Image (cartoon, rainbow, N blue to C red; front, side):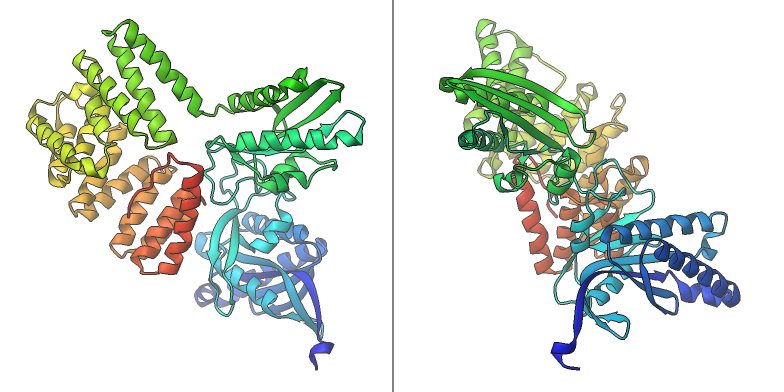
Length: 564
């Protein structure tokens, strides 16, 4: 057959296989055969009912195809849910489970069968699916996001045997976390706590097509202004304007663009007068977060745009640089009026420190914070140890100063008052470790936990204890402590991140993989994977996740990344 005679088509390839078929057969051959055939019959019937076509069976596997990507995914979910119900009441070792892989790709058609890379990739996806789970390709996910009733989790890039390019994969498993109401609304590589927003083109209500440029210009200016807010992710102008002139559903826009919020509005211009209306909608609920109308003249059009931007920032409770600057100014006025007001000095320290942490390493802010903390301390303000807290922000060239403070702290350990709270304990241990006194840090931490009245067992300070053990090379003890923290709070991603890094450092890669698999896609998972590949010497993989972390850091300047 020549190349010209080969027939190709784009289709959705569905591949399902029985989990642990050999083990089940060895335990009870006849019972396993009957159970597997019954499960395959159930799957085949569901495929046919959902307009799919079963092409062939390969022992305990099924190859099928669908004309519709969404029908293929819905079918897979139905099959898994039916099998879970069918298996209820059976012991785990006798349950027949399927893994399902689905891919959208071009295939070769010949003799009623399909062949090629598109088929091979579906089989590879099935191999990495969870038992009773589904794994789909990124190409398929792009077609179904926002159109299906279940959520898929980003599984990152995967390399498969005999597939030349790495493939982005997504996973589904019954009872997985579904806090996000709109499938696909979390942009890859973004912190899920960051507000995400798309600004749709404002509608020209003037009745004059010539004024279209005016309403577009206002939309573009608002996008630009909102993009300057570092705590907010705003979709680019080109993506937003693809919806211009279209009647769209807000929840579909959120799913397509990977955002939670949408701003839409209108502009009406009559002579010198302008009216701007806007409404901010939460795509996860369809409800209004905020709506308002602004009237003015062409002379104050920029002021009107600023009002829209500021009200959106306020509605989303976003911290702004100006807000911190205003707070610093107010506290400076307060201490000027009453230099003996210790709490005002302490609040000035906090405002300056937080502004520096969130918006950049400004040494002038450090000096303001240092002076304010010193005044608060001299005036007897408690319960913190602010001078130590400030020193943890010193640059590396200030390390000798940190060491002097640490030596002073070492001299005072026996006199340390447990009632100063876990905050003071945390800062004291940090300044000791920053100065390189790791053994002293551990001894101090143990001393504080044993001290009468310390009461740190349930505090945040307790979370640092495993790191102190790790710093002196007692990795096994650190892992044991992190395991205890995970047992108490299994949903806390930072705990699994720390344990995964320690597992990777000690070459326990299987354990590291298990922790990584539990982490949601995002900064915690990317950092854990970067550590994993670093300790395996896989530099290309390390570079991939390093680049993802750099992208997150640009969007979130305040984020700190744990070294590994």
